[in-house]
Length: 90
Image (cartoon, rainbow, N blue to C red):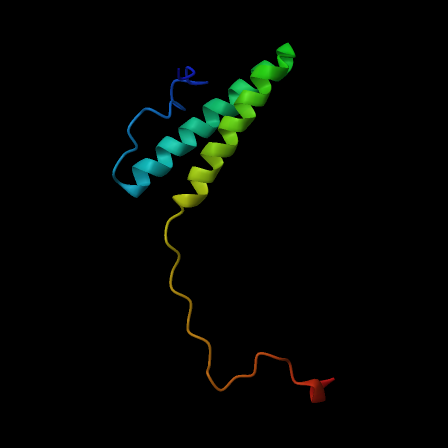
């Protein structure tokens, strides 16, 4: 038996959008709704609900990290450069 979602927009059964920007938006909405829910249950002192919300936030933060946009390619290192600083310069 599956548990109901913590918030409507953090429902894991919802399909993830195809485009990266849309995925990032959906993840941001889920994280915002979970942050709001975490504040609410913390004020009410509902420890089991708070633990569940925090677990869901960890899941959505993981998805957020997985769906980061690709970074620009870094320049390749100079093959002639030494990885160690020159000790003579001290």
